[in-house]
Image (tube, rainbow over all chains, first blue to last red; front, top):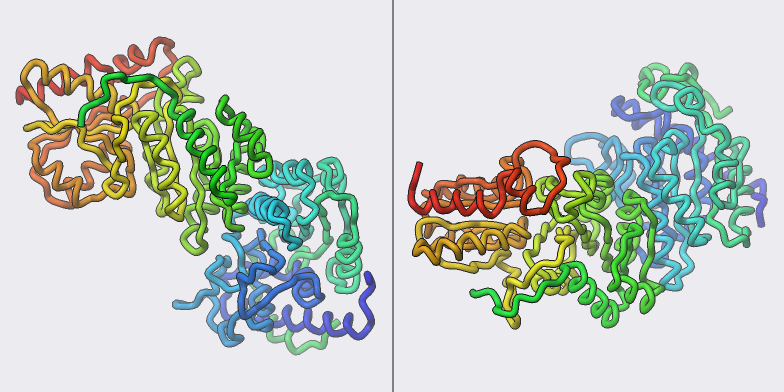
Length: 278
Length: 325
């Protein structure tokens, strides 16, 4: 099945709205967090974690039969905290203490947090480590999938492309790289920093099975494309490019060239939380 | 401990890789990753264990990251490349995915770097390696092993596999004579070997410089001046109590390393220990002067020019033994 039924679609959309709100609340309490790049992948993570793609066991985060999810764009995954807490990886009230003394939930997550596999935030590492994990799983005859969530700005790091060549050469079809393609780096649009031209063409040329989600804030579309990619029988690793908006849903932040390090005023967050979902 | 009389020359990498090959035959969890770097012994690993050998190509960043991924899934990984490239080209990968990550997730990864010091004599500074002891010793969780001969290099495979964590093994690229006698088992819990007992001055060396040091100590011994000689082969996991107790038996310690002098290598290790333990010992350092060299010549002539040749260190040792200023 590659289409979400209406009821599940509504549930996932509602969950995405809740995650978006909780992310804003965390940012209100800890304004030093990078919020804009955490608002673009909300729906990606919601579909992965609630949509049945990841085999997981929140009470045993290192369960050997789990699918591995490496969140390579660690700095932009504040939205994962509410998801992991909601699923039971840790208590919900931990969300009140993000970035506070004694909390394990920092501004950039580390694997001291239940549910995180690797060190993240230093960019360009997830694809290579994920390729190593995928290779190990294949050599051991295990069917688990390794997902790596990366950003398009992160893809300026050359280490990614070493890993992409490697994964295609070894036909690691248990590796899925999801690109949160919000097209903005720290100092402006990635097309103006160093353009990727076409990420899709690049992945194709590197020997990957490439998929694209036009609206990365539609849970239904993300679900459909991920489900289609899951049926891929080409033997290639899979890249899913998800076109998103950095700072999604926040006036003045959404799509702003310098949104990466921009904080949102508490009054605006109050106002946004009171508004009904679009 | 005396050096063996036969003194056959061999390459450290050959004997170490033979031991790795043996381990891969015994243990299906051992995996070997190369950055397109080989040796005849490696060909046997490639052919006998094709499911546990992989060549990532000339891509050291990916070498480290793939090795980390394999290790997170339970493989005991050997990663293999030329020393400056496996240490410096991918230093941040090593910091993040080995040093940092092994703090919170168990893993077993051994980096094998070939080409210590000037051992790639004619290849020049890109392929030579004089910084690695310093930068690898800097990383928490990293065990830094520096064998002096092919015999001890061979014995390092088992402790690397048996102890969880991350290690860097610095191998010489040249054929070198045997220093560790047949039948001896280096004490990995101490991390150093006392080759010669003496009085007054003790030479502390590592890697290739232990060969130079042994010749210097023995030539002066023939003149009636007996210096001590310690070979340090574990520069992070050594037994500090035992090392301090040994050094305290001397008035002067002369360090010898094929690395920059006073830049965080072996001399800094000894100076820190002497300082922390308030040992009444003077420390004198023999290491490379602080510059890169493009001149061609034998390793010995380059060493003399850089201040660590046999003549230079023997003269230095002699003057210390004679208590010259």
